[in-house]
Each structure stands twice: as structure tokens, then as C-alpha cells.
Image (tube, rainbow, N blue to C red; front, side, top):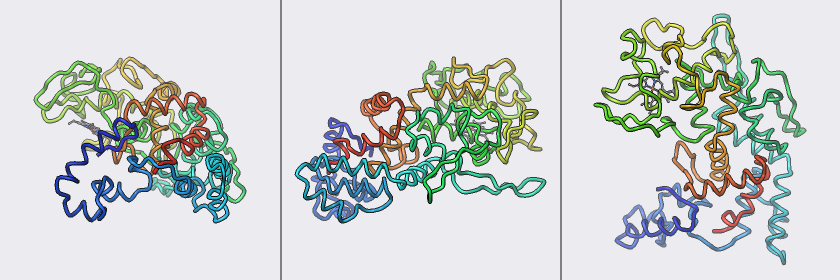
Length: 403
Ligand code: HEC
């Protein structure tokens, strides 16, 4: 079930959940909450979380402080902090000061780095076997750059646009970030990061574009579904791209992979977008290093040949972020992503889900209603993409302090 945070939909969720509860609770319901009630109708993973059942409307600063301290500092509030809050004549003010204090500590930077490691599925080093030996690829730069942008209160959209300073190291002992030279030339935020390219290396660079779509835009492929619906044996094609703009047997009976196949499922629903993007990332090899002279990924057919542009798209097709948005280079691709409202909504949703102990927006489908998502992105706009200030606002929000 999708837990939503709009008051309207909370009520709807409550109503929807009631029959299971009042119309004869099952044993699972009873196990989840012997006292019954709405929480008892939720699966344990939801009911046991501290911030999910937002039918609770009572303000509880002590509980909120506990949840905030765990997330923002990695530890419980101190006894002194709890006492200070409990005895405060103005609890709102003291809670607010404590949140500020948590966000100002070095432990906040460590927590936020951990958050991005978790989000990006990256960290540590990746040993990659090459003909000349094992290369240990640094998988810390991308999460560290994301943490750096937040720690420094910078414009977070630099994540996918910055051309310098993207390869930061972080020393938790001294709480310092240090810029180091990147191994790949012509940085475009984390999109050209060696670690990202190595971690998500795969046939035809598809896992890389999948990662951009899921980690940074918060939804799975298909990413474009606004085309005219055309019924085929295998299903409905609804991508805005012409089916023939992706390589396949209709254009070329000898195409190595038939992305125009519509017999069992419609490859091009996903691959129309993916195939116009992936060649942009095809020159990064298994260790994530950029090789200007040749495509480094393989086409997964007999003999595993190096991919050719025509394996993805017919000659003359524009490399593109989306239909009608040509992006001939990674730099333009990054700019298009930075300008995509879905990117802003995704970053806001990920931070919201973290604060509220919700699941992952892609894996667990812990999405927000469009209305609420729009409210959050307006806040990101109001803070000029400063996500540190956005985080501060989330932890002080009316939602966060209610149980
Ligand atoms: C629902 C979206 C979707 C559909 C439909 C789809 N694909 Fe894919 N395809 C993906 C994604 C995402 C990946 C990357 C998977 C990964 O590596 O994580 C992928 C990967 C691939 C790969 C590379 C596999 C490898 O070995 O790494 C090939 C080849 C491919 N798809 C061909 C096809 C063909 C042919 C069809 C139709 C029969 C098709 N796909 C249908 C989304 C889709």
C-alpha cells in the first residue's frame, strides 16, 4: 500500500484499511498490533517504523528528536538534550535549535555521506580484473561529491553538471573535504565519474543509463510513455519515439539485437529512450576509464563484439536525453537532467523518505502523491537547490514532529 502524506489521502488510506480491521481482523493483523487500530492493519515493516503511520496527529517533540538525532547524527539524543527539550517553556524553539545543532556537527556530514552511499549503491573500492592485472576503482567519489554539495550548502544540481571539483575525498576525523584530480577528463558531475562508470558497466552501457534513471530520476524504465498507443501482439507501444528510431529487424534484418521486436513484449517502450542515451556512455571501459578513440562496451550476441552505434540506433538518429531533447554530449545530457523536474522531485523524495523512515522510492515504490511532490520541489526551488536547507526544513516540518 502506498502511504501518502497528504491529509486527504491519509483519510482515504484509513478508510481503505478499515474493512480489513473492523470486518474481522486476521491473525496477521492481530500479531502486528494486539490492541487493533489502524497500525494493526499495516504490514509489520510499516507499522514498526517510527514515522510511517501518519494518521497520528499528536505533536511529540521528544520522539521527533529521537528520530532526528538517529538520522542526522547517527546516535540518540543525549540525556541533557532530552531534559532541555522536556523542560523547555518553548519546545518548538528548543527543538529547532537542537536540529540546527545536529546539522552543524561533523556527524551530519558522515550521515549524509552514508545516505548517498546507500542511495547510489556505491562505496569502498571495486576490484576489476583487466588483462594487465586488477584495478581497484574508487567507488567513494560519487557519494562523497553528493555529500560535499550538501555539507557546503551548494547548488545540488551540480551533481550532474559540475565540470570541476567532483572528485572529493572526505576525512571524518577532521571533517574536511579535499578536491583531488579526477581520472576521467571533461567531468560532468558524477555522470563521468570513474566509479559510477565501473560499478554500472554492462553490455551496451544499459546498466549505466538504468542507474541514472533509477537513482537520479526515481523511476524505472520505461521513462517515456506519452506517445500514441499502438497495439502489437506483444502489447501496447506508447513511447513518443518512432519504433523505427531504435535498431532492429524492420530496418535491418541483420541487426544484432532486435529492439523493434513486438512479438512477446515491446522492447522499444524502454529501449527507445535507453538506446538514444546509452551510446553517450559507451566509451567508458570496465574500469570506468574514458577512451576517446573507441567504444568500450560489448553487444551481448555470439562472439561478444564491441558495440557499434548502429547496434543501438540507425544512422542519423540523434543521441538524446528524451524524445525531442537531443543531447550530443554528456555535458548536454547532464544539463537536460538538471533541468528535468523529475530530478528535483527525485532528490526531494529521497530525502523525505529518509527522514520519514519510508522505503526506497524505486525498490519499494515509496512514492509521493503528485501534489505533495510538487510542494516539496517548490521548497527546493525556494532554497535555490540548497539541500542542506531543505533537509533542515523537512526535520522541522509539521509532518516530522507528529506521531
Ligand atoms: C521494461 C523495460 C525494458 C524492456 C521492455 C526491455 N528491456 Fe532490455 N533492458 C532494460 C534495462 C533496464 C536493461 C539494463 C539491465 C541491467 O543491466 O541492469 C536492459 C538490458 C538489455 C540488454 C543488455 C543485457 C545484458 O546482457 O546486459 C539487451 C541486449 C536488451 N536489454 C534487449 C532487450 C530486448 C531485445 C527487448 C525486447 C525483447 C528488451 N530488452 C525489453 C529494460 C527493458
